[in-house]
Length: 149
Image (cartoon, rainbow, N blue to C red; front, side, top):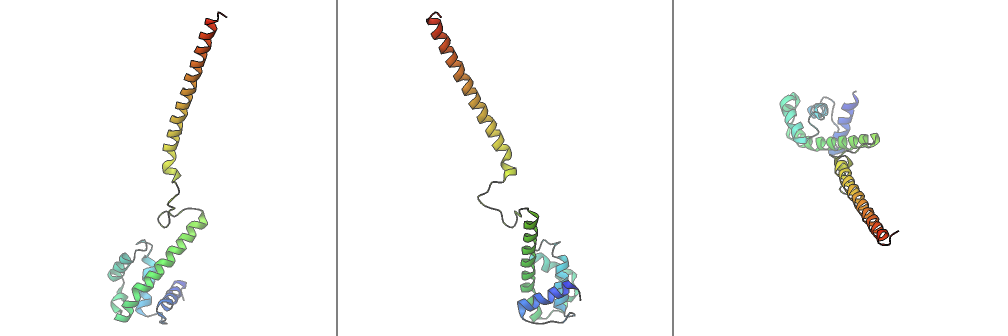
């Protein structure tokens, strides 16, 4: 049996406490949802629409199975999101769409303004020092000329 089918069966049991046969339409619908979930960015409403349009087993679902479908899909989406976060964390990347720190600066966006500000500030400090030294030298020269040295 395919590992993904076994995962679907385990998910159904976790959510509903029902054990279903591999040929049950709900199992086939949920298996189909695994195939299309990434394409629809794990958005529940989009996945449900795609299932209704392109999965023939969806029409075979009775009311009991239809009521199970959103809960199991929601659990699959949550697990997929957790797995993708772990994958991103293992790679050493930050997944900004999932969890962006609120107090951290985004260095890529703020790098240029900080550098420009630093340059301007440095230039102002440099000019202040030059004008200050010029004034000190003028005072010294004037003092020396008054003393006739």
